[in-house]
Image (cartoon, rainbow, N blue to C red; front, side):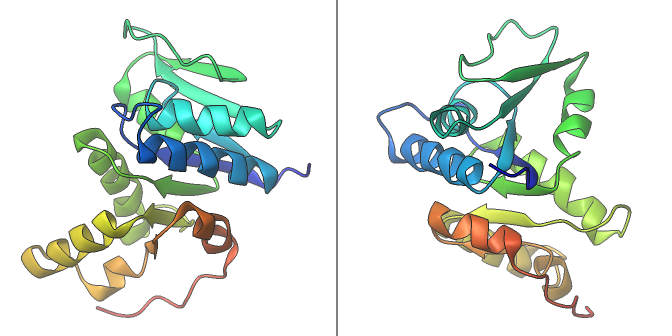
Length: 181
């Protein structure tokens, strides 16, 4: 398996093994590992556990970025853990990837997407693929564009797909030229 880089996956910690979000995330972890990517996540339960499990099942690498002071235990599928002193170091470490994928989630996932998206929007860091998965993201982005000051140029920094099977091709596709606002 060749090393294609590292992909950070964001998503709900509340997904359980019997729900479709968990199963889709597990498949995503497997697909990313089979494509040669190391999978990085927050390292705990839900989507983070599922992508780690999928990567492990495919013989890949699953990196968990955790917080030293949190009492939550990392998931058992990690091949390595990076323990950070606090949440902000964790977020910075999660952003040190070659691409990003956001599954469904709650406030934490929304925050992670925003913290990743904004430096691309402000040209503070080089743009990398940021893929959001599922119809809920499509609807949310429409609402954001309607109700907030988010432009077509801002939206062009994201890649929206409907299924996890579309993620690896979305990561690998060349970026379209940025449109002006």
